Length: 110
Image 1 (cartoon, one colour):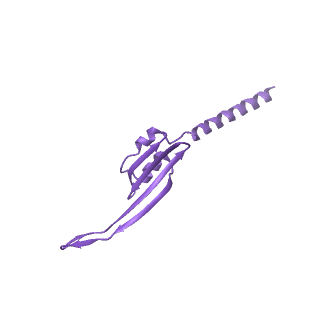
Image 2 (cartoon, one colour):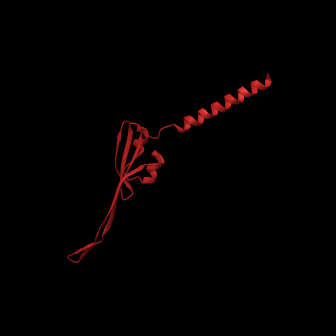
Image 3 (tube, rainbow, N blue to C red):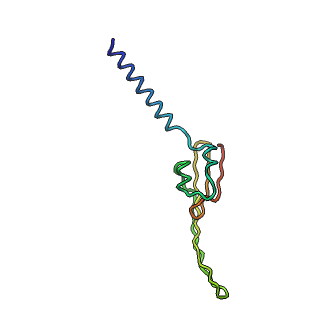
């Protein structure tokens, strides 16, 4: 009698532990509160700390050469852009980074 009771208590404890782990894993990072934390000027690392790893949709890099006009030199520059998305079902967040910093963000379904 005591043995059966112990097994039931152990099974119940294991089941409760599994539910706690499952609930912790299933919490979505795609919420309006997290979306609102993403701000212009943040790094990709900062955004991914809030939303998790994003999926790269597009990227480009352009090198603009330096010029000299009337004895005044203007140095060249490199500009890069990247678009990342996060999606869970109908919830979508898109963030555009320019030179590694948030330039714009959009959301649907949050």
